[in-house]
Length: 299
Image 1 (cartoon, rainbow, N blue to C red):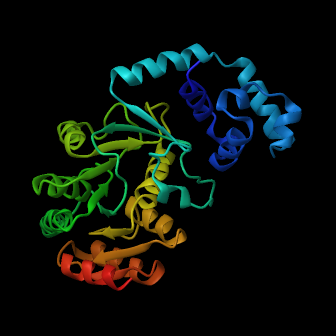
Image 2: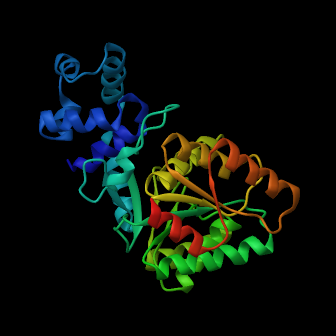
Image 3: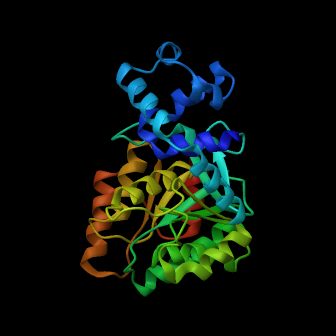
């Protein structure tokens, strides 16, 4: 059976074993299939505690692997690749994501597109309800950064994220959209944009299909990837709460460099977000792409 089937099966119960422990176990056992089929004593020798062993054994005895074989076929039909934690193509910087608040580096990434180079990335994010000034500044910043050789990372959301991707595409550059799930594309109004990104960059996610109703945590998982593959995070405009602030918290705890555009518009909410980023997350203020590049050169 294809090794990717076992990766998909374990991804379904991702909390059972960390990617680091799984990589160690595969190295010791020789393959993920051997790890999957090994006995309890060997699992204990590999460093799993008794509760984890019982949960894993119970799961593998009940799961139908043929369902994941079918899923793998669906992925191939949709031209979605799987990049596992032990794959040479896996973003090396993403492995540096340290465990906190139950967040790990992804065990695998679902990938669709032409881009497999995750080096030299800068993430540009911000609020969905952004000012026209911030929209223009985002388009300009994104296009200028790709002209300087950077790849733009964002989350395909409306507002700032959309402008970040569009700026990169218009300048003929590369961009990566990190999604909460691969199917269906969210938000639906950006389906056409996602198709353009596939041609000049890629879509990636830790999740294949949207499932359930309480999906807030999927956006948290998305944020760790946006921060994790980037050399810095640039926040164009945000209020004092919301997804951009949460991503700033993740980036801050990962000791990531955070930059924030000084608001020219956006009102009281944008100023509150700006001050919070400066005070709590030690973000560095910038006014242009020249400011950002100069600060990166000094790092």
